Image 1 (cartoon, rainbow over the protein chains, first blue to last red):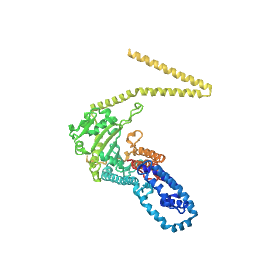
Image 2: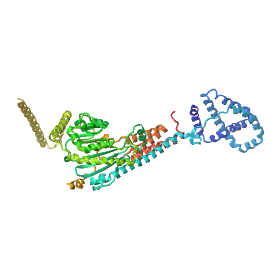
Image 3: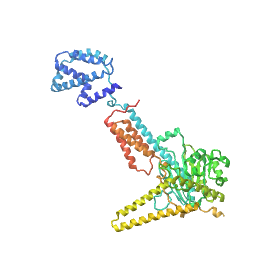
Length: 485
Length: 106
């Protein structure tokens, strides 16, 4: 390896010298011979040329590293000799050829004798890889290109599989959706609200469908969140950690379509996670998730609820039936009138106002097959869509009794109060800065007024306003004192 | 009555248009992979070009492929193409400057 590294610069130098290269490889010995021949016309050249060559060649075997320098010098010498030989050779081209033929036998006699000693110390230097005309030396590149081709193949196969799964899902659910919604499929870009009748592809692995125009709800967004089959890295990662495709249904409701309650049911893992992550579940459903077995469900499901009455209301016999027969496919079901998504991490303290809430029903279903799904598996999700439709109608009819309503209202007031307390300091600061800004703006306006008369009047007006404010404050303090007494 | 049960639940007058969810308020919903891979690809191709490292250039090509595979359909194709072209040019330039094959690190 080190030999190669030392040889490389030397060889690159040689490559830079244009004419010597070919001659160097082929005519090394001849060049030397011809130079010697010119110097000593009738001398026996083998004695003179043999010794230095033999000396040079004998050195490398005992010492590995330093051998490179004598070899380099020899090569440099060889190039110099070659150049000299070349100049003289050009002048006496024809002559040399005749002389060659004349002294042919004698010359080659001596040459043959010297051959055995040459052969003993002949060392084959490795030709650097890029000078070899073989593809084998580029095996790393070939590996890289093969990897890229594999990635592209996987991309095409994965993309097609996801597309087929999405189409299969849509085909099995199309009739149900079209019979329930006036608008099936909308990407929001067309001028008129007409059904596109097809899925909206967001990614190679995410497909959306927006349905609207139904009694009891504003609209329903269905997201088919498939695995990233088109990305080879993801495919390999999934071999370590299996995951499954998901279908997420988000139904947004109008204010009159739902009473005020927060409820969730799903797999134990999902419930534990959602209680920590979701803003509304963490605020309203403080208790630990209850096991579903209390309400006739399997033990694998657990329930988070604002109050017991809500659970009793939601878990009627039909719902329990749905949940028990498809427990393996249900990841989570979340009904909430205070839905605002997951908790948002704030960088600079708390937000100054409560996050916007929307009455929402959120369903997350797992597609059976754990990644190895086939288009036929999509049919098994059909009863779950029936459950969604049933839930929409049910939630419209579900009303809390007076007690429950009071409790719910108290809960919401409590949450709001907590929030206001937490942000009190921030809001005060913000109000203070706003007041200062106003004052500054007013002062600037007064300064910018060119007419001195106007300026005086504006100043007087602002002074009067400040005076009034101070008086008001004093009055308030007096009133509070009186009340306290 | 049975008529109510069979009533069509569809209400064409209650249609709401689809509004794409605002990703500014929910940054957690967005997948950062294509952006990271794009950036990584550009960094690696710059390294490969400047430092004449072949393996950097090859990794850049892989990064730009991964970024493309994970990209959203709404994303600009021009950026994808530019990062892809940059990585290909890094590979080509590395080989033009030094035609020797890549040696493995072991």
